[in-house]
Image (tube, rainbow, N blue to C red):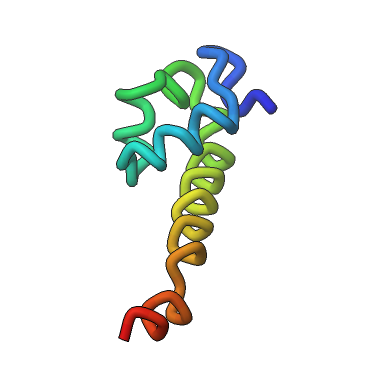
Length: 69
């Protein structure tokens, strides 16, 4: 799904940027151009970025730590 029409940035591209260490909308804008033109996608882009980081944390939740102990 396209999140930023102005710069053709997709949800997949935002998730990839998150996996590569992007943590803020400013970083995302510098990396992909998302939200750099009209800004109407900023809220959705930030939500996708937060969701990507939540999913990453959930993948390494407490049960994994318990197994290592």
